[in-house]
Image (cartoon, rainbow, N blue to C red; front, side):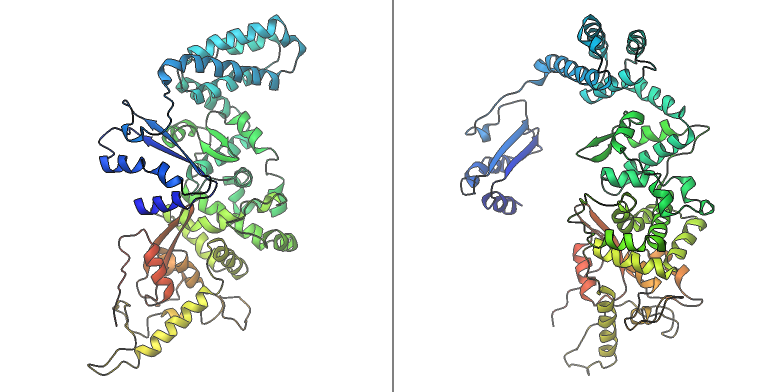
Length: 508
């Protein structure tokens, strides 16, 4: 690890590093590690104009960094002053933004600021809580009259928990459509497999539990009219104490457990769990991909889709969520401990809808940075392996291949071998010169081994697949491999975070 980090620092170009170290002088950091951190400035002298700033939390001076220019900050001594300055600045910004009245420049404006300063100073919470408190205090006033504003400020809660309870009660008093939007927004922010961009969250929030109901008949055009035009403003107005926006990404302010308790009302729907989020993704994909009226727009919008460049300034809002839904719906399904029959049927129906499933699968390969001909290569590798297996060498001779596939209790005639999974198109699909991916193949590649029995014909079975879970930054995916002798299996086993993935290396 030292060699790796040392190489990064040494060969960096025009990079400003920030190294944050917690309790630098504690036993958490052995002496040799602390000594090594002190060598970083020397490594940077060989770089091209790179710098490094250390942010250290330590009760004693960092002796190992004695040669570096340092600034000592005692936050306890300056917190009261910093808090007052923050409150004054934040209050002034809110007043200027919400009440652009000339009267605020006089004595009345001064009176409001003084009352806000006193109330916010007494508020028991972090600076983040204070920011939420100030926003709520100004937004809670039903009128913009001086009396209403002052009354709203005086009635503001004094603790974060009371503030959250008050915000939830206000939210539950909203009309059902607003509350459903809030439930969807909080659910996606809380359970998303990666942080959602503002544009992605706006589209996802339009897919409520009532939207997923098949009887509604909502089209992609209908969905477009339900997507918020100013998602950040809507979050600020309705979810200021639950969700915040940072650099156009959404995050939860309070813990998921608190959100669970707070948002479950007697007369309102509960938060959406992974089961419902899976259904939402499937509904979205079938609606967007399967809508023939959107074909031209879809092909134009999705042609440049890429995980590397997902900032599309001119993207149609209805397509903003397609990258996330394409890649992560299988992972939401895998999070469900006991899928209901309704959920399993929805997944099976999705795989058995060729027009949607095949287009989704090609998008999935692209979103996952996988080759578009991956299944074809797997079939070829499996076929080659079977052919070689039938011509094993004599005892004592050099083997041409080694089979690592596990045996099964079923006979070969009952077993659906990997090479035959894609021998034909899905039911209802048109014949093509290139074999189309089968439902079983697609389900295996995205790691949905549990759904395979529902996809197989009667009295058919396959060998036990090898599951793998691969994570590279935010790019998470699960997969299951039948052909344990293929290059893809080797790559998956190496990159997998599962302890039970067998990786056998044989020297020939």
